Image 1: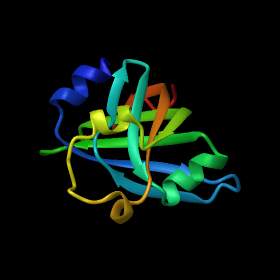
Image 2: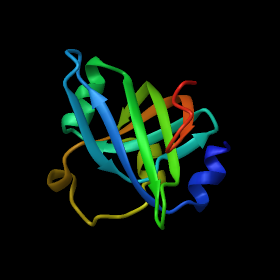
Image 3: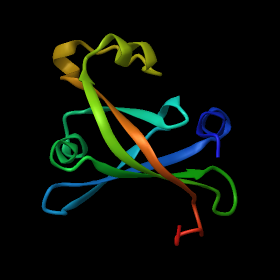
Image 4: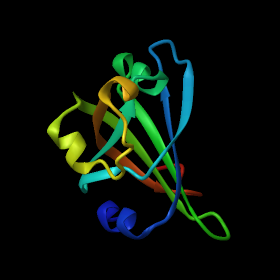
Length: 127
């Protein structure tokens, strides 16, 4: 799957799952990833539970379900490579301007992941 082409065309909703160092799981609604290349994606996040979990456990899973009938989509298995706080790159790829001051929004983090594996939404779970 060419994830760059896929996320340019696909419309739907996504869920990012993380766990802390003790294995306590969190899931959160996230927009489509920012595809850096076919092996790297990034998400912009606030300093909340998902970001906190990634400080002690670099692994995450992203589930994307396409709009429409049936169950179409993708699952991305991810490993955190690095992150940037309030960087030029973050603000250059941000899709929406929320018209908030830095004090109102707090810090923003661009978390960059290596894509370890891509599977369809349903099936192919033994790979």
